[in-house]
Image 1: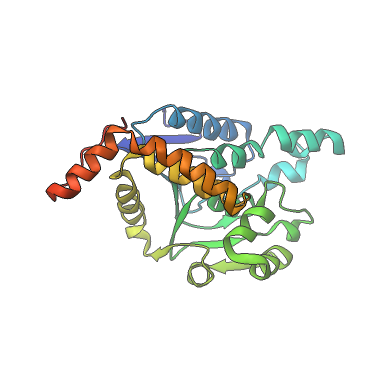
Image 2 (image 1 turned 90 degrees about the vertical axis):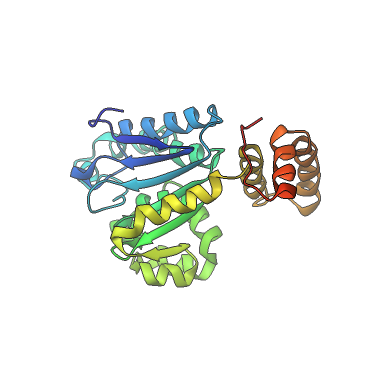
Length: 268
C-alpha cells in the first residue's frame, strides 16, 4: 500500500504486519478510510491461505487514540447528526471493525507501542494476543468523555480480564500501565520499546510455523467457545477434526514428527 494509506501492510514469509498510519491524529480509528482499510484487509487475508499470522501496531508514539476527539467536539463525521443518525453511523462505521476482526480467520497479535485509549484500547482487545511496550498504557476512557464503549469494549474487556477489573477500567476511565496490564492478564508480554516488533514477530512466527488449516480452525473453536455449550462445541470439534485428519498438512506433520524434522506445510 502507498505511504499515504491509513493502513500500511508488509509481509515477511507468512506473517503480515499492519501499521495504523495516521500518527497526526494518534491513529484514531473512527475515520471511514481507516475502517474501510482494516475491514478490507481482513477480507483479503481470509481469502489468502499464504497468510498465517498478523502483527498489528501503530505509527508514531501511540498505538491508537480510538475516536477522533476533534470530530466529537465539532460533531462531524460519525459523531454528528440526530441520535438515529449517530446510531446508524456507529453500526455502519466503527462497529464494522470488531465484527471484521472477530471473523478474521488468522491470529492477530497487537504490538502495542504506546497509548491504547478508548476504541484504541478496544482495538487491542479485538486481537488474539497482545504484547505491550513499557511505553504503553490502556484506558477504557469513554466515561471520562461522557460516553460509553460504543465499539463492543464492554464485551471484549469483560471476556479478557473479568467483571471486576472491567468495571474498574470502564467506570473510572483511568490509565492502566503496561505492567499492571500484564498482571491483570490484559497482555501476554511487556517488553522494552526497541524489542516490541521483534517480540511480536517472533510470536507470530511461532504461530505461522504450524499447519495453517489447523491454526485457523483452532481460532474458530476458541471464538465459538465464548458462547457455545460444551456439548455443541464438542460436536463442532469432532466435525473440524474429521476435516483436519484428511489434510495433506496433517500427514506431513505426523511424518515430520516421526522423522524428527520441521514440517513443510502448504495449506493443503
